[in-house]
Length: 454
Image (cartoon, rainbow, N blue to C red; front, top):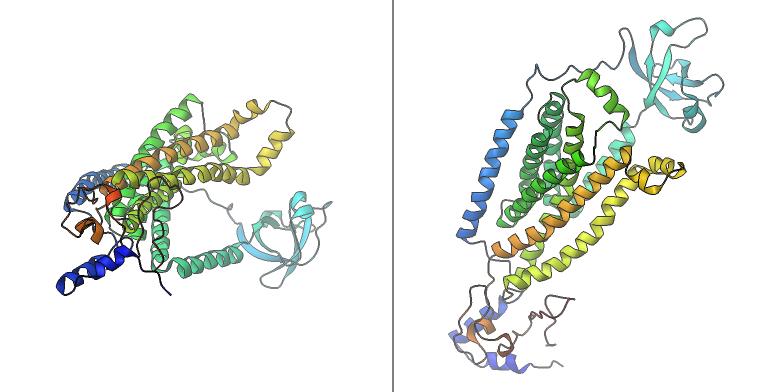
């Protein structure tokens, strides 16, 4: 047995063309259809912002693109006469002698020299190893084979395939587009960013051009050429600029030198033009790029989906409710970034814990200080980008199609509609459309409440 809502009975009373019109309006009420496309004015404004940004990005790529003569030569991995081959562990190694029995690809059984810590902790029968053959080390008793590294190609390839399959299965075509965008981003970093830094180009400009180029490709390839994506792109670009400014200031005032890793100590010997502090700044900007992309596209999509769910909501209300989601995103991302660093630097943190010095001194020294600045700058940029992107999205999202109640008013007459899609009459005087939700600005739980049972 169904309970008939009085408002619903009143709307079913008219017959003929008028009745059909009301039923059509009711069918396309709150949440029953996609948000209308953005207005021409909004698209022009977004294009006026993004087209110059894209032109500047292309100009930056051309101006900063490393010339062949400026890029240092690559370092040979082996000495003259040496070569790399593969082998498989076939027995237990001896810590005293530093030798591990292996079988080469041609079936030859021999021994390989390896560090004692690897023999004690790392080798198991069946492990695949990369070996270096040194002809000058061969002798009556010495083996010419030296351990280089483990072969990890197969397990990493399996993980990559599993990741790609899951992305395609869950996200489908959008997941495929995202993977394509990621591939393009990696090409940009390999072909432009790294050679430009090695050739001594301005690190901050390289970071901004790289981030902008990658975001233009990734966002539009993965999410389509829409006003929603353009809104997220504007928020991302502003967030990147803010992050770059904060990274430059934070690195210089905190004396982040970039000399905290083993690689940084020998890089200037092979690439004299590099700026290690600038590379640290570039790293901070690139590290924040992915998180910014995440929060900006999420906030833009949130506003668009809220508009589709509640076409009559005001822009201020859309901003307020989307920011409730944004605040949750901020809260979760704060410890996400921190724990990501904790997991990556766990041995270093354990060494700091064992050292006999104050915690404040440990957190502001050396490599840890660099990561602390990186985390704080990225988090500040993220926190600023969320309300900014939400505000832009709330302004640019198109107004929704009014419901029958919004158009006709409580007495079935012709009502006026305000600029933001709401009827000019007070909300309390407009009955809800049956089968749809109503916006409750005083409720934090849901944007749309359930309608009466039908």
